[in-house]
Image 1 (cartoon, rainbow, N blue to C red):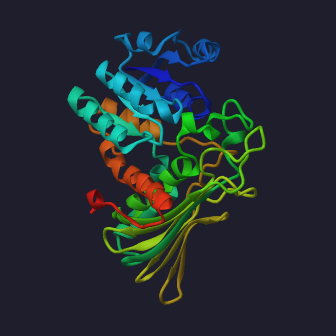
Image 2: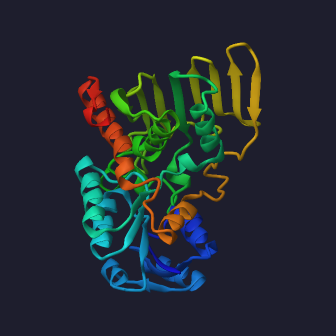
Image 3: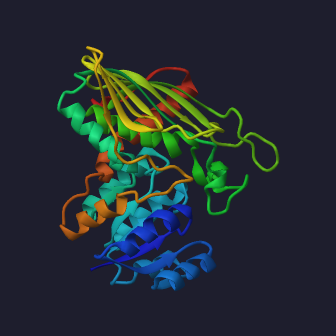
Amino acid sequence: MFGIGIIGCGKIAQVRHIPEYAEHKDAKLLGFYDINLERAAGLAKQYGGTAYATVEELLANPEIHAVSICAANFAHAELTIAALNAGKHVLCEKPMAITLAECEAMVEAAKKNGKYLMIGHNQRLAKAHSTARKLIVDGLIGDIVTFRTTFGHGGPETWSVDPGLNTWFFDKTRAAMGAMADLGIHKTDLIHYLTGQQVVRTTARVTTLDKRDASGNLISVDDNAVCIYELSGGAFGTMTASWTYYGAEDNSTVLYGTKGIMRIYDDPAISIKVILADGSKISYDVEAIQTNDNQTKSGVIDLWMDSLVNDKAPEISGESALAAMRAVFASIQSSETGMAVEIPENR
């Protein structure tokens, strides 16, 4: 049995991490910390365990073996490194951190302390995405030539535990980045996973078009990002992240290969549609994608607990997440400079 601590008790912790730990036979929730102590106390009362007034007190509990970091983006690195240095395994929400140097420091802290670090890139675990990866590896659509992948919805202001226009997601001092880091990191990591390639060059526009704060001013982080990605194996395509899709959520990916086309979550009724070069069509009806309005089991906690129970490095390790984070930071740099940015570390 592994004792679990939760650092940051907001929406992602409440709807995914905490209930999924509570259902897992090898996990026991022992500690909760949040800047809102009353919120942590309510969860401790509901699930058992202790609400701590400080992170340090939670990390000092020797019965807590692993923690989930579900705090605001700016705190990910500091909290993760503190937990690793305290001898805890760490599952950290995305985006991994707000600078590449912080991301690399997290990976080094995990190595130095001999502890596991996993990042919550849950798109890899969606059933259609894992099925698509197998089909691609088997050569169903041949070599991938081009692609487009999109993640867009109406914004995080209805998702946050404190909903409204004053959500921390819109605050640059706490979030650092907007749609690019909230949604773009998911689809960047997904393209790496599906193709087996990594982004080596990006040309991007990361900007704020429509979202406004409670004062009516444009928010201080981006609400849209469009990136042209060139991959290490020669594939070429676009990644779009948006908080201004005010209709149905779009979480689709289309891959164009030498033998056919694969459409993933592009049709609400069919999870995967393949159209081969000879005109034949194949459909795969697997689990629907999660949306903010339709939360289902993410698979993240099951994967994390499998790593802990079997003492093996997590599939979505901190080190493996670095490639996607490099692409995110390079895309922001590209937008700021108006130039394409190379990522030699991903080659």
